[in-house]
Length: 601
Image (cartoon, rainbow, N blue to C red; front, side, top):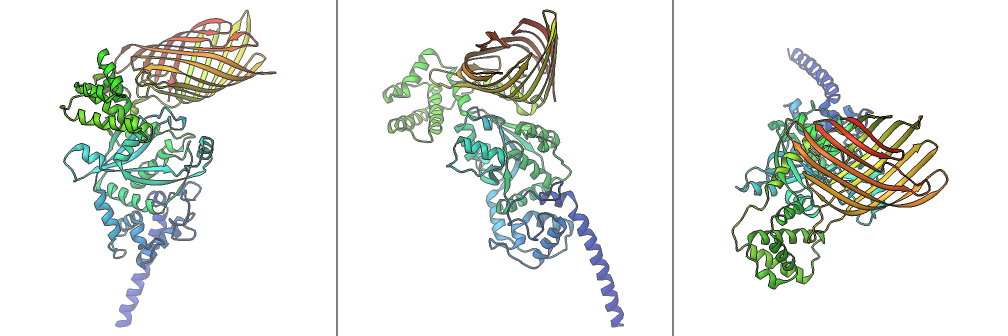
């Protein structure tokens, strides 16, 4: 009888073991497990280093890593940092016990529980910081996650600022110069890590120090998804490093992969593009997770400008004097002027990395004391508040663009890989920063009965327009690299320019003095020039907008004594991703008039 019972037990156990082995093979191939190990289509993981893998071949064998993980959890093996492996790999532990609830008796992970208690995580938000106009490497914007506080603090601002941000950052070297920084960023010379810090620190960096607008979108998660997000963040913050590339393996790429871990049904498309652009990834997440805009925080510079434009001439004079004279400061009693001065000093202090002179520090602290003596007022005018609707990044046009144009004796086709130029719709885009690259143009025209074909490509064209005020000076600038091939002439041009500008949704103007080095068929010459741009809003509804946009590009071919694309003036009608325009354009053979249609996608 005993032998029969023993035989039946062993027979049942062998069947159970066989089923478990089959389940392991199946689960090892699942999206859930593949995603949590960051396994790519080539079968290998993106994770660098040996802190993340338990099996020696786990980086290329998800089944081996799953088996090693389960065995190590059962056997109380410790990680190199001294914690039990199951207490390090909390994300893996979560999905394994979700799959096999009775697989083993889990241990109490004190370090993790203390961390979660301090995190006090409430709702999750995807945060978008707009373009940083002073840095071309950051002109696509930046994205990161934020949890607000669940229970600590009664005020919304307290719950927000004292919450924690989760961002993937490249670990750079302070000794790297601008060239090294760019080269390493483009070639994978940096590693990326998950950086977790109090959110107020990121507000200080992006909103104040770099004067970038901040937009937040609430991401609705199930209780299980939120729990897995936190546990996975814990494990990768202890064990993971990735190769970092500015163009395609950047801050946004890793955030998308993190969402794929917690929701395997979400398959990101934008992370596989040639260039991974934060604003494009934001739009994908908003669509996929049905996210709604939660908050808009205008930059400190925009707040100062908003207040400054509300001041009278006399108040502006007091503002200017009070920045340098404490006696003048004591004479001011208008809350709006004092508020503008407080924000000015906040911005100035960030701008000089807290290295204010003793006199400046004294005036700054006294300004804050003076402002505290008056009641709080609403300092943002309606224009700044309306920016939330106009520049909301989730409603911007597509990344790519195709253009068809035709007129008397000419036709033109253009295909642009990305991203946003001066003639594109401002809806959903920061009107400070324009960057386009890989813009191929082919133009066929008839001159004096003869046909000719022109080919040109804007390799990269970056235009930064900053509001210039006497009390708040800021420089506008442009860099451009282009190549043109027409008739028997070829030209490679590298251009740089500096100047001033004023911008708003209704009206934008800039004027730059430029200098370009141009390599033609048989010579290299330096060419001074002038760039002027204007944009005027005529009419607008939610469904369409009408603008007049003009740009003068005064680059002279000294040797040939010709003006190439001297100017373009267009009456433009925008309707979501479509653009229709009637334009006149100066070219070397004279003036062309035509119609143009473009589609962004």
